Image (cartoon, rainbow, N blue to C red; front, side):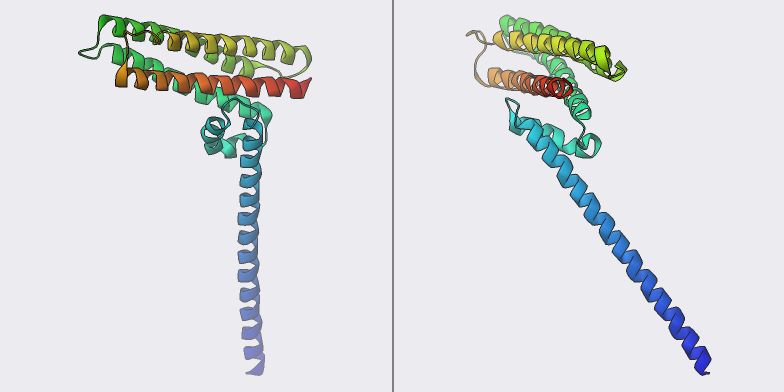
Length: 206
């Protein structure tokens, strides 16, 4: 009888120890995950502090922290992906707005021109993304890759600035002008931030 109780007590102790160990492991995993997440977001925050629009940079990239981690290359690639998505949606919005009933011919023309400029911007950013993805990442390959990316992203920013300049005249005013310029400026700011991150990445590798 005593031996039976002793065995039962032993089994109970084993179960309790196993549960405690499992709980401790789960807690440790959660703590490590939380620490990694903090490290990742701080890396993004620090990197974004060197851009022209740090708040926008951080808010647009922090949601991708688990993907970026602390990789400068992934930070740049993600910034370009985010910028491309914004440029595509804004270009499509310009085409749609140009067909809005009641706007003036000059307003419609300005938005169509803007859509074309943004389409060029989309092309330049897409080429940059492809270039980074296809690069072997070493020596002369890196130098050529980063030079191409800097050139294309700079060209995209110029296209976006040209688009924005198209709304400077008196032919477009009021709410429509504010909405349109707000969309275009967001794309331009994202592109500017991406370019700053690219330049910082280039400096790291030199």
